Image 1 (cartoon, rainbow, N blue to C red):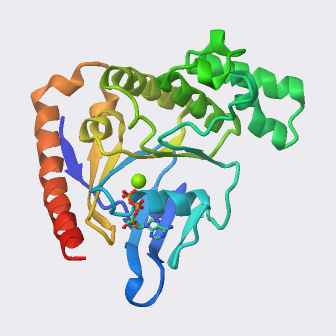
Image 2 (image 1 turned 90 degrees about the vertical axis):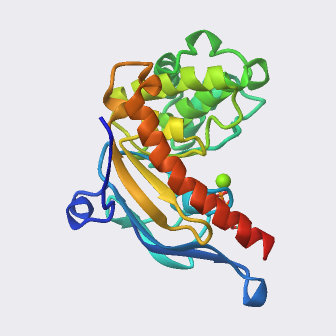
Length: 277
Ligand SMILES: Nc1ncnc2c1ncn2[C@@H]1O[C@H](COP(=O)(O)OP(=O)(O)O)[C@@H](O)[C@H]1O
Ligand SMILES: [Mg+2]
């Protein structure tokens, strides 16, 4: 088992694509103070792909995700979900951030039921759906608790259940496990894999952890230093393994090394950029 380079922009991928990113770029500010966060970038995801994006800090990962979520507008290019241009937030895209953006005044169940309720789903049905999702993320017995009563890992699980509650076409995740301790993180990674296998969702997952990317992904993109673009992309198969200790194999270590080398050179470049900015 290993990683193979792939072109995530190949014509055959675009024809069956769930998500297409087309020459997407983003600059902030104008004139001499302008910062180009994203270089024109192309990516396509097929239904059921689990794409992990890794890249040096400040390379534009969150910017890319914010554009796909509809929170930011691109400077050029466009993104299409199921062939329709993305221009605003929408329930067909479920978003989860590093820190849970839960409503502290609502119970866990109400938090998860909130999206469907806001879209006009009847209360009983929304609650039923929320209960099913809390079961999926292993939090059934916490339905009546409030977010402050939960650990960080549990809060992120609620965030994931909440994102799934709108039955999104795609999940967009920005370092959702970054604030968690290593042990919780590894357990949640296993859970996410199970949830992904069960739901078959298309996922774009940003992480700074190469291990996390290799453990979860079907595809990995390594982004360049700012302005971010896809420096390299790979097909990976470790996530197909049933072995929870796949991370301890020599194949995994070799794959990690290959990505680490790429990432290191981009991170060094980013550091030099910052030093002379
Ligand atoms: N709203 C904004 N206004 C100005 N600059 C921004 C804004 N958002 C991000 N940037 C800049 O764009 C670059 C990429 O940021 P970001 O996408 O957050 O990087 P990453 O998530 O990869 O760490 C950074 O240099 C950051 O300072
Ligand atoms: Mg970020």
